[in-house]
Image (cartoon, rainbow, N blue to C red):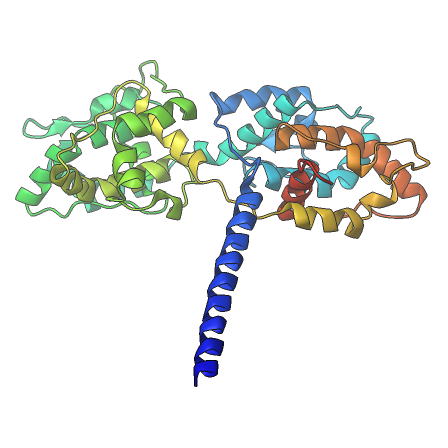
Amino acid sequence: MKTKILLVFSSLIFLAVFCFLNGKTIVVKNIQSRQNDQQTLPQNPLNGRVVFEQKGCINCHAINGYGGKTAPDFGEHNFFGGDYDLISAMWNHSPEMFKQMNAKNIKKQEISAEDFRSLRYFLNFLRYLGGSGNIINGQKLFSKMKCNECHSVGKVSSNKISLNKMGVYASPLFLAQIMWNHAVKMQKMQKQSGIKVPLFKDDEFADLFSYIESVGINSKREKVYMLPGNPVKGEKLFKSKKCFYCHEQNHIGPDLTKYNFNQSVTKIAGMMWNHASNMQLAMIESKISYPVFKDDEMANLISYLYFKNQNPVDGSAEKGKKLISEKGCINCHSKGNSYNIPAVSVIGPFHSADTFFSELWNHLPLMQKKLYVKGKALPRLLPSDVKSLYLYFNRKER
């Protein structure tokens, strides 16, 4: 009997230790997959437009019809994802890209880490800018959402608040900011009048703004623009306006990592409006003042949210080690190789994924030439492969 008890007890201890160590291994792997993966925020995501033109991307790729016609238009086929996604796409596309460049006698440009960082922020930001809304649909929404119960646009009504001044604004961010700042008062009046607080979906916010802007009597005046947003400043606002307090620190509000903010600015604005009513109640209970925005603050906050939840990519240094052999990298980058190129053991470390890719990209023509002589194709890489290779080359012991 005692022997059985000791065996059971020993088994339980073993199981507990195993679970602890296994759990610890999972945690270590989880940390490893994220090491050297800290995302930075851009001051101005549109700066990458300069790189897009200077490096000749515009010769083949257009943006909303402006540019070359031999490759996808980034205005119509938006790029989704972060650095590893773009590295993977450019790497896999490079054979065809170089072929087209040779046919057009376009010299391949080397790219620095800073250039690549600016380029990926710019391409990623194009979806945020969105497009124009549908005026006809916006007119229907103006009535359907009961905006016309309290507001007039075009023809002035003495007992309604005119929105004609909105015609001077060129950005829907103005409407988003004004609506947000007046949400408490507006939604209170709607409930008193028995009007259901309108909720936005799809492109409805953009449609509503387009209609209001088109009908406003000030639409012929010089337009007033708002900058698309500074994510760095937006991150500071996220904390100073107490968004961080509810959404991350105390988990009073929804976990924002569960939301897809990689959408147009008008869709994000609509999501924020839909959330305003519940947020008001939560802030009253927590004795927090309702946030009010001025100048470019709304744009800054929304641009921060846009970049906040970039699609995470899994990867590990151990997987990267296996890929070195599986993808054939070791065939050329072995120690004492005849090609007189760096061995795997001396490559890296890299300050960032941007640095890693810039060196990889600048090395591609030579790599493809050697593979072509051997009758081999460039190995394809998934975003997780790129991250794993990056983590491997950044590991101290190889």
